[in-house]
Length: 337
Image 1: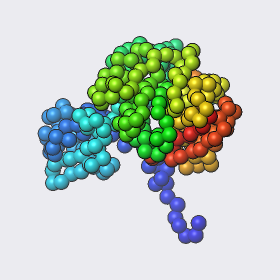
Image 2 (image 1 turned 90 degrees about the horizontal axis):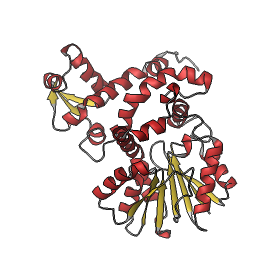
Image 3 (image 1 turned 180 degrees about the vertical axis):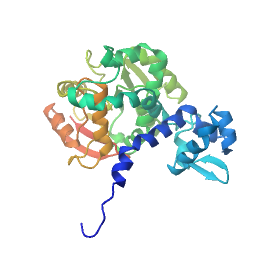
Image 4 (image 1 turned 135 degrees about the horizontal axis):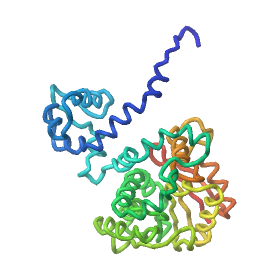
């Protein structure tokens, strides 16, 4: 340690981290970054536009400057390059959907983390007897918001998969639990020779269809309605599962991997992508926190390491496996039949 003086700075920064987090989430909820994407504004204009109380508006905006989410030149506030690209609702690169969901739902549920750690039980809608997925899929507006959030969450990984996987060897692919279609769209845009689509519950069909049509891919991507627990998976050269396996317990994970093995031809590939926990379980904090989020959100779900996943894939019958980094905390595990 030498003469280095210990301070509580890191402890305090992490312990009060929810202050900064909620400030950002409220800014997204208010549409601040969308308004500033149209041009810089002073505090008075922002206060009027967003109907803020003048008492706190300046502190709110300057806190976002200090947190690196806004820039201020003179008395005018503007987005940073990142917030301008990813938090303007008018842009196709908008990734705020997942943060909108975090603000509307997860923020309060995480307040019960201690209870979840003691009981092992979810703390979301399931706590009052509701089924999260059942409730979600029964409300079209809420479902569309969730599916858009999933697109935002997967966009960076989807583009990396389109670039890093050897797609030239294959002709067809299907994304299992495809949500709005963010992953299949990015892959199809990057590789003109591919056709395929996505599988999800029938209620997702119109949302998927509208998104695919808007991207001009309705001739190459189709929707496969079905419950992946109850029905066989569609047959294709490549199957993809993104942010799917972590929702389920080990028995359910193994069932899905075996179903993927059964649906693939010899030489076919399965791609699993998640915020994989690093094998040493020391580095990827987001992957580990995502696993705690599965505790909050599901009855048996948990996140896992690449080593965990390759072991399960081999148990399911796959012969070759590899783990490859994508972007940020995301990685993919590829298995060949």
